[in-house]
Image 1 (tube, helix red, strand yellow):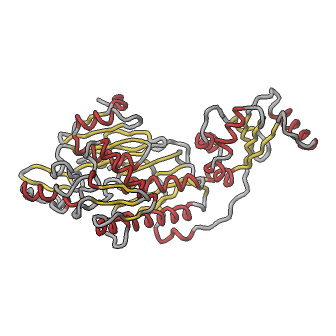
Image 2 (tube, one colour; image 1 turned 60 degrees about the vertical axis):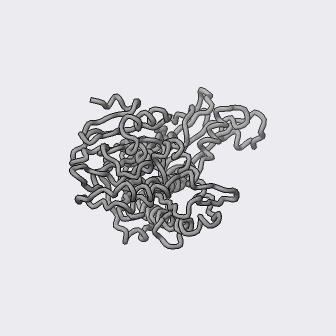
Image 3 (cartoon, rainbow, N blue to C red; image 1 turned 90 degrees about the vertical axis):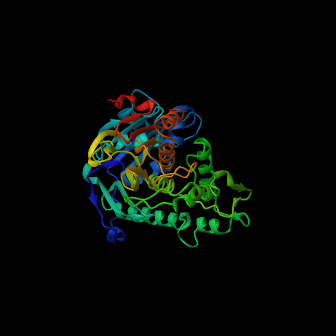
Length: 441
């Protein structure tokens, strides 16, 4: 599991619905000097930042946005022209465009906002550094969702966090209702029961998720496969001693495994080519849910947060004090011993390993991760952590790299742009992908 560095106030689930408080009047102003019909950087800033939904939500909470426009073709009233010229004389005598300033309620300039090639999120982070720390806080909730421990932590204006947390919890519960393979009536259960008889219609979101899963299966040559479910019934991962199932049992189970037996047909329908094939999303579902909640919170203007789903973790923005989030990779034998810290600037990390779910057989420790290619549980990888821009991708690739092993796994990671990996073998030796070699020691 990955450990996030974030001392926060913890909110109980029973208090989630008690959020209250009115929106405060903004004490800050972002003054934008623009040439709206001739200045290309001004036009880009307007489209990419001012019209961005995340920025609009953030500005509603924290600041007023005022645009002093100096167009060349668009007509303005004389009063507006005089007003804008007075602002320019005071705040932009040099005549720069775009020129963006953050002012306090008394009109004092706090900082100039950098705009060149800045995203809405980067502009928000510049502004956040000047907000009073008492205006924002970190709030968190921890509970069991999707059969796993979830912790959601967000940086929000005081008295606003509980409502956002409640919405996040409800969103994850809704995802579980249609994604779970053990909930009767879910889309997955419906497919497992009927998709071998005829193509089954599914939602666009579900269809796209399955399509991405099949793409990852292709990428990993089958090391990641959502159809491995039948194999898991052969094993009990209770940390006790068990005999391995014989080759005949594994062969029978393997005959009904294979992502190439899942067919995506037209009109968002899915068909199984094997009547015994069963799918499940245990190796990607938590990452998918974490990504979904993160995007929902960002769309509401939550500028920073962490969603940790039992080691499948995504982070964005900064902490309430302006510091960056950091993730610790712990010693598989002792979670309190952090082997290294990694910055998590708008990144996601997922960790798989044999430290929590496993069984022993003839002195060998077998992970709960099953190789879909031979039907055997994985050995040799105590911990695999994959860092990418998506918790869903990190989740799936952490499983795949565990299956592939250190050499083939890291070779795969090194071929994927924007993805890195820390692999801890069962001798507790750390191996790093190319982009993390600076951490090697």
